[in-house]
Length: 315
Image (cartoon, rainbow, N blue to C red; front, side, top):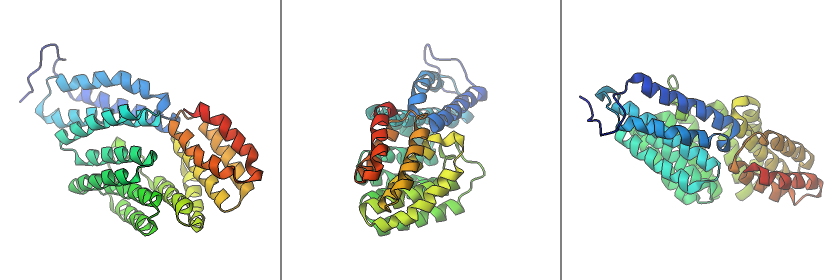
């Protein structure tokens, strides 16, 4: 009934040990959302060996899958905070370990979430084709687990990848699928790794997709991006400071595309204010499209200079 304990491994563990890891992941994930991966990736790395020690312990059979899932999620979080801090090779290493453990646990919903995060790495670094491949694998895992929430997350990100590729019809169709799946999902007991995906996040993703459609397909999509981003910005609480800053940046880009330079400058400055509390290299990267667009407008000179001042401090 029990795994054999290797020499030097921890003694038998119980439910309290697993719950401790799960609680630690929730607490550190909250810090990541609020202050960025740069604020907590060292704390995650410090706690990771203690979580991994459970894998070598004597574990009751009824807890084996939960142990694998808990440690997988610690690696999942480690990968995300490292990605947010700009350490891509290390991030992908942790995602690979997380995926192996989630697969061993038979947790296909978590595997889908890890695929989503791997895809986001590729999407951020301008490889939307590779991102789409990961998102499609994730959708297969999501449907195998009957998790419509996991599927909605993947659909949202497929839409974003399609937008970056300039494939507008597919992007809009994926957003519609996101909404259908989200509304049909059971959200009564959402795991930590998927809890971020709320109605607010739906608005943020729709705004992000329409922003890139405006940038790469037709500027008229900006008119659809603005209200979605405004809804998300108004709904994010203090615990989602990074996401709010991202949406403010996108909103400022759209205002420039719509020739509202004064509005864009005000919103862009607001984004910089919110961004100063967030330690995220992704924030720096997201500012670059805003800087590039602002440089086209003489009325945005001061915003351009403020962004340039901000960029080195955003890592």
